[in-house]
Length: 235
Image 1 (cartoon, rainbow, N blue to C red):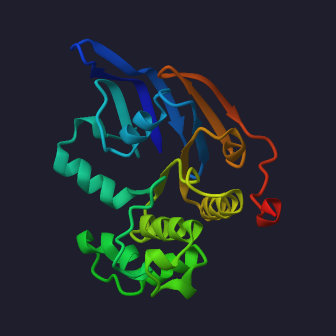
Image 2: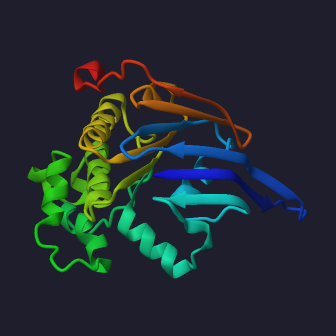
């Protein structure tokens, strides 16, 4: 599904010098995989996530999504591809404070080209076990519940690819495991999940761990005997 070939990303430093965030990153992710991208702050993992999510462009290399070279698309075509195929979950929940959980989830549908969007918001909330909180505002929800709303919002357009950037960073251990268990369930249902994290333990719940250091891939390993993120483990 995802094919990165020789991806590099260079930014301008304060003095105008080039600062390399990614260096010759080549990576393939098959449809239906659950992959964690792990690294310390400054390793390039969020930059890589932004490129995979079509939020940023590499300064060199090629990126093919479903066989299409998306690095050659103009901004409008990239936005169209992003809206159709990719759902995003971030560390900060980015919820509208004065609207209900259901209304927050339904926001992406305003830009949808679907002929029928009825019931999609509630369906997405059901997928994250939060249908009993549809009318609650963010201030009436716990941190874990707010992240579940954010996941439901990412799912509402039924994307093929789910990208999560430090989705457990603001959560306690119990809530973090609940969120990871949702990602596992979505992956078992066939959705491709790419998770960025600095937390080695959280990465261990995925099926594959790619480690970055100074913008380079230093290891790429399959997880044997993937363990479920059981809620009981957090007690």
